[in-house]
Image (cartoon, rainbow, N blue to C red; front, side, top):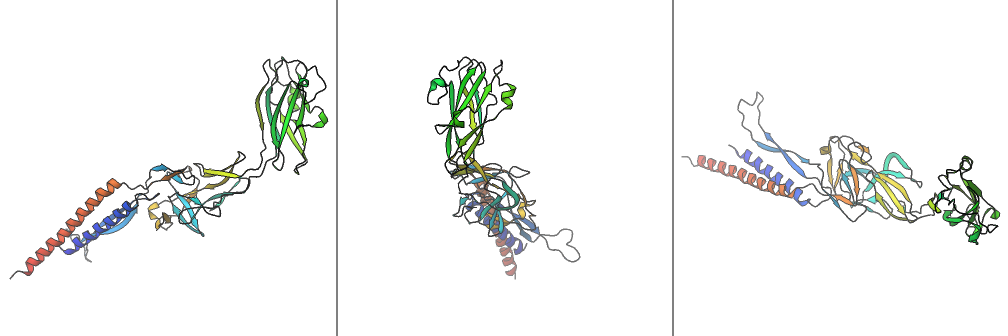
Length: 409
């Protein structure tokens, strides 16, 4: 017996306690991955071989291995908190220096970039003002706070039922302020090129069995000089005739004096409109325009898409988060601050979209907890303490043996 085994055992137990202490200290660190000390035995060998029954000279620390198992996902109140449910790492950039993280506690900086507590920026695919993603090289994701530009109305989808039991109005000619001159009316807001809303009213006047004239007004003023803008004809089955269907959409040309495009041309598509013996009904009345809107909030979808919500009820793509996977995650170099760096041992990062391949899904308003099992760590701490005491005892015993030899006369 020599002191070497005992000393190496004391060192190994000390390293084990250091690893356990670091795990315990980071039990509440979001995205932290626990570590495990791996040891190997040590043997001395001569040039001619070590013999048939070599005696080891102790142990040594081979490496400290991090356990990249999934941590629990906990809900939070921050919409920028994002948890990875599955494999992969967030790709972070700090002035061009790329690092990787599992900690999804993000916030916006004053320039609109999504950053972590260390100031590193989250990267992904950026979107232009039309919401089209640039899927080339990942770049820093910036949340645009500019207004969403308006969209001019081009089509109104109107699906009605005109009551076949109604009579032809006796009062003529048509007057929008005289309800006795028309059978039914609808209204919908349409938008010009500057996002100004205009109320488009349509009036339906029965002219005979299965035939109806359509009049229109915008902002309380008749358009087309007060004349009809079109007509609808129905067959005996209550559906539009082929000729009426072919004439769709019926154009309503609205004069605009707001400084926008002078003429707002809106197509009225009456596909699916019927004439049955039932009360007048508006089954569908949708238009494809909207006014400008300000960013009111945003969220991150499971596939990493950053969707902005605007005050005009619209949404737009602001970017898309990417994740990175490694062939050997244990080869990553810990940098502190919940970050890792790529190394030759880890292999090159495989960048892709969340939910694709072996990359996990993102969960907004949530964080991934540390995967440290405190109960197991406390038990490991007791074991390490006992190992330390046992190795100290071997040194003490060796000292007593040496003392006995010294005292021989």
